[in-house]
Amino acid sequence: MGKNDAVTVKDEAVEQRKLTGRSKQIIAFLAASVSVFHLYVAKFGILEALQMRALHLGLLLPFAFLLYPGSKKSPRDKASPLDIALAITALLVCLYVGLFEYDRMITRWVYVDPLTSLDKVVAVAMILLVFEGARRTTGLPLCIVAAVGLAYVWVGKFLPGRLAHAGVSVTKLLEHLCLTTEGVFGTPIGAAATFIYLFVLFGSFLNESGAGQFFIDLARGLAGGTRGGPAKVAVISSALMGTVSGSAVANVVGTGSYTIPLMKSLRYKPAFAGAVEAAASTGGQIMPPVMGVAAFILAEFVGIPYIKVCAAAALPAVLYFFAILMMVDFEAARTGLVGLPKEELPDVKQILKQGWHLLFPLILVLILLTKGYTPHFTAFWCIIATFLVTLVRKETRMTPEKVFKALASGATGAVIIATSCAIAGVIIGVVSLTGLGVKFTSMVLSFAGGRLPVALFLTMIASLVLGMGVPTTAAYVMVAALAVPAIVQMGVNRLAAHLFAFYFACISTITPPVATSAYAAAGIAKSDPIETGFLASKLGVTAFIVPYMFVYGPELLLMGEPLAVVRVVISSLIGVVALAGGLQGWLLGKCQLWERVLLVASALMLIEHNVITDIIGLAVLILVILNQRQYLPAKQAKSQ
Image 1 (cartoon, helix red, strand yellow):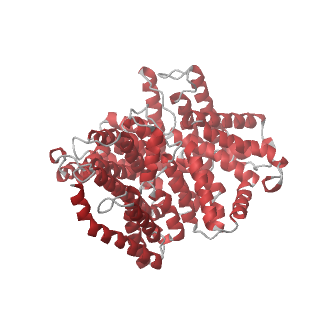
Image 2: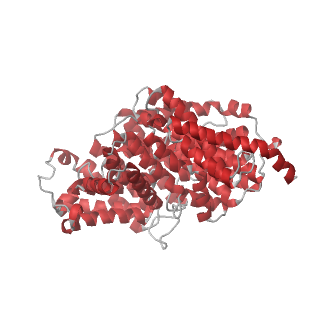
Image 3: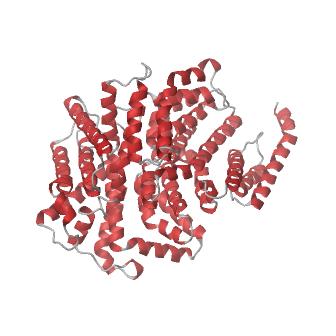
């Protein structure tokens, strides 16, 4: 949801075709029509589960073939005849389940009534089309994981030990994956069809309203003149954009196109400029009220209202962005980076005067969700509200052309979500059909030997590794199906366990060697992607610690007594400052090696959430501060 053209938006894996002429007009019209359909059902009533999911996938899967080339030889300015044929076939096989044969599908005895030959053909075609659509939009890794899952269905009965299963017939597999709500049309695509799509569309409307530029201008006015101001502008604007976009790469493209060149113009190294933007933009996935797509699915898995997920994620998100701000501030102090000249700073009062009305839809999101309204109801009325508030000022007024563009870009921006959720459904279907989830949980528990830290570490590695090759949503869904149940069985709060996997799936976008956010930022900064990824991981190091913090101290998720929550928040914020100082080698001044070691030790004790460790950690931090206050003037005089 950056500032790209409605039908040429870049997303997390593969670049879309740059359509021209009539092809562009036709596909934009079709995409806008998909958005109108979703708005219609949101207003007049969501359809029954299987029908809604089948129609949603049927309307979006064709765009995977129309917008994304199948190979290097495929045309880049229009869809080929083969692409058009695949798109039509994708539409028909989904309509077969959700419209043509829907009545029979919901009244038949599943796994008892025999499938017709046409049922089997449709199921096979659907699986192949979902695989090809996911390959084009997300790349090979996710397809390989799903293919291994399908292979396990056949070879599992020959495997020894816990991985063995009784065997599954081809017919039952096809029925389970394609003709029920257990596979392709499972929970992920269900969440995408009902409310995730609408929130993507909401972000698209906000983008067309000028909210993105408003956030950047506001951040520049608030922090641009401070030490390391341009980098802080990147952090604050990405946090603000993250409240509505929920996409790391979209944030990089939307805000990085301004903040990265600005940082470079003030002597920031290209890799560091890209790393700041990548780390900050990744936080957009964990920043309420509109978090990443996986957060909506998380709410479905845990069985709680989405607003409770937002509430639980709020403090960890604040900690994450506060940590990056402190890392940036200390880096600026260490390297002598200054803020923007006063004459280049916009007037905050003037910015708020001109764009205050653009904040109303965000406030409305929180009000409606807090009042208990459903996410799809909330998203629908926030879209309407966004359009209405733009009419307040001529500069932000949405013309029919802008409305059309928002409708079209909402659909094209949801294509990757649909294909990712569909193929993730294949993986979940295999897990539920073969009992792999229970087996995997048993293996994790056995390997961990009842030791929670080991189980958490294994889950972290699984989330990071899977997230390097697949979108955040798919990475989270796979870990949630396989590893999270083991953590829950070891006594971890269910919401905390799912958030643990979710966070690591999110930060995998800045974890080398495959780091999509860092790669996108490196492209803008013209820096080395690997170096940018490592620097982004360093800046976002708090995100590697925070999940452990809320597993062992659920007060960080607003669970527990109010006084305990306040104590945990204060100690965590102080701990973040100590950690940033230790990693960057600067607090009140340049740190010696032993001071850096003590600062990191202080940080780890402060974030452990125990009264005694908090006192020790605070004492160590005060010791370093007093030492720096005592010797800092002498160091400064010596340097002069």
